[in-house]
Length: 383
Image (cartoon, rainbow, N blue to C red):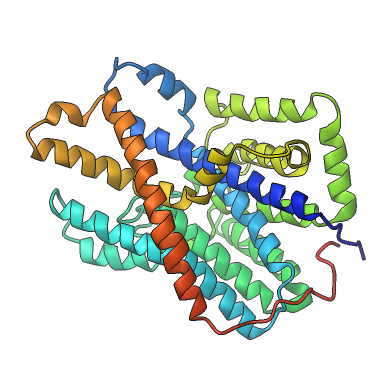
């Protein structure tokens, strides 16, 4: 059995900060991509921003890679009992659902002042239960009432898959990868629809079945692989050693940035934006965390509140435009100035949401959970 390598307190903190920085970058990338729609063609900075964030949805792929790694990180020392597994699921839901539900309900109220489809009650229930709204188009499957909620459907499914795998104790990763093989390879191959392109996956007729067989999930799997490699001494040293070769790490970052800016091989599949996302993640976690003593505090804070940024940027943009029109100033509801205003308001609202909901409400709800033990697994994660 391989031995897990230990990290000092400073290194562990640096690793977590490196992940927070990546979360912040991913959230900002998606946010700017969506907010740029308020600018008209020919507005100042319109071409520059469109050039830089033309692949904005790639931030979702990066989020999924991070989630895969984090699931290895937070579960590796958990005693695998039924009680702790239920607590794991409860903590994941507490972390996501309250903020998502509050923002979704607020956005639903805002949309009621604008326009809502006749099916909105059903769509609201499905959205809050993380159920896809439709069978097409992949990988969004009808999005959600709060449109960014489509990606949370995948997040919750991934957490459930991790929880079920944990029921098998020492065999949990074998079970996890078996489930992945069945859902992402076996079922699609059986129906003759296997593909690695998330937006080309033909439907199987059932929204949730479509979702759990979509290739976008390979991004989570990539994160799990990287998490297991991180806690495997030999693999970690080999990857870190390779990245330490002169210019290798900068080359990884430059190629990833080039992919996102150029639009080369764009898409949610593992060999599309998944490659660039994995490259950036590997460099930050396996290399830069040891060489950057302290990441910029504002980037770490942005990562802390990245979930609120992700949830709030669309409601803030829609709400701000609505207020300008309501006050009789529709001219200010679009343009470059509106872009920078909504971006600023999103960051302010996200900070408030983070403190009140993600920190205080989450802490209160977590205290209601029964106390659980955290013990080191008797077997190492690696090998």
